[in-house]
Amino acid sequence: MLSNSKSAGQPRCRFCRTPLRDTFVNLGMSPLCESYVAAAQLNDMEAFYPLHVRVCRECFLVQLPAYESPERIFSDYPYFSGYSDMALGLAVGLMLEGTYLFQHPSDSLSSAYGEPGELTAQSQRFQQLLVHLPETERAILELHYSHGLQFTEVAKILGLSKGRISQLHKEALKALRQLLRSRPGLDLRM
Image (cartoon, rainbow, N blue to C red; front, side, top):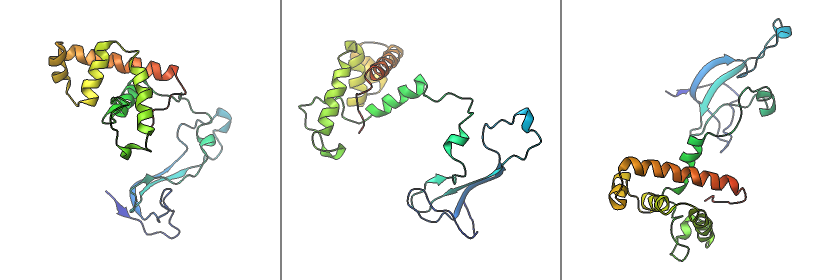
């Protein structure tokens, strides 16, 4: 629940610069996340920072003021940055959802999705990736993303079980991820 905060010198929104007056959540004071104190530092004072998260009334960005640099926060961070295969698969799926990347370059593409010709070029690059997929996997992606069919409907059309469609869909997204990784210069951004 949002509460109104009434202290002087309010921070401003990072995005729209509106004064931040509303509290999203206030968790009090905390040391840096994942900062471990060495044995020699056990008697030293540790810095604590306010975890007072605010929300902007204009753009609704939820944010925390930056008290430390990313270099200081993540200098001894015990986790590896990156992405999981599942997250990348979801990203590829979301990228495909309703994008018209399955349309053939000769089809009429709306300029609402970018500069004139930009979507056609993206579609051409995407079509180049699809030719590397087996025909059934290509058909599943096209039927599901381009035509908006559920896996049950795709299964009926292709004469396969819904479970098999799900497996092949997963394999197709995995193959697309591998293709995208092997072509770092390929840009499919909208």
